Image (cartoon, rainbow, N blue to C red):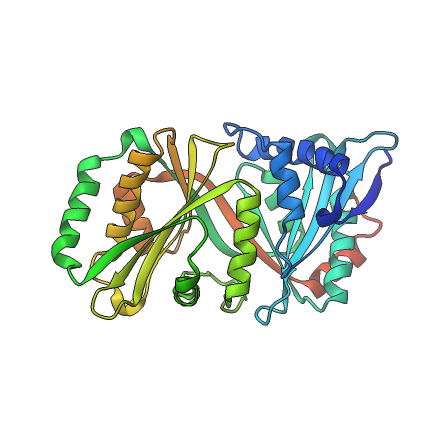
Length: 352
């Protein structure tokens, strides 16, 4: 069976290119998240056209001759910033009925060509237990599992509301020197520099054996990310805690919600600076946010969060709240040179 590979620039893709990519992505998404609704076309379009300018991205789509439907795609992207200049993230996805025909092999060759040209010496990709073909492919390449993680899910109907009330009550004594605040949506300009510094606490989160450096945030990056967030129709709540005596931010937690998936809320980062820990601030933040979700987002039924399997402190809090494993994930890493070697050795072999 013959197919054609076409490069595509997501930022300038036509409406029709967005449509066929949206159809393909939703078929792949259904394999990974069969209970979730598809992503609407308009959200896909806004996602493509509002990729932050500090992100380099190149993509290729694979289709059968004389057919507009996509059967596979390959993507490489990386940050055009001063940190992690050696890293690129890679996505190669093929519809189940077209796997093991050499398509992934050809897409990988295109991805690696860009990585080599841009001096990206380490490639990172993600697989999930629900698509075993992904892990099989990375194993054939000889990639290393840099970090194992889970998407954990809380069913709100099973949440112990007495527990979150107790955690908030405990904060009255344990965290009496701190106060909570809320940023709803785009961050206020007057707090932006403090938010940038607060975000850097996430660099202390476990990274397994991934060969990556600390990520550096700037006000410009924050605003670019927010522009993309708003364009996609995603709403963000950020609860922060700060020291009353100094006004310094001590920690935060944030959640994301999109009306296109009203029953699902994504719990993103929760972090407290090391020198402010052991005051119960993490539990206070999580409990206060859950309390707000229950009051102001009654349509939400499930909360999902991604945690490294080695992040024992956060897993302890989440398990106490009732989060349960929903889907396992693995972040893989492999040197660009090793992929080139694999491709050279398997040019005439049975396709991957």
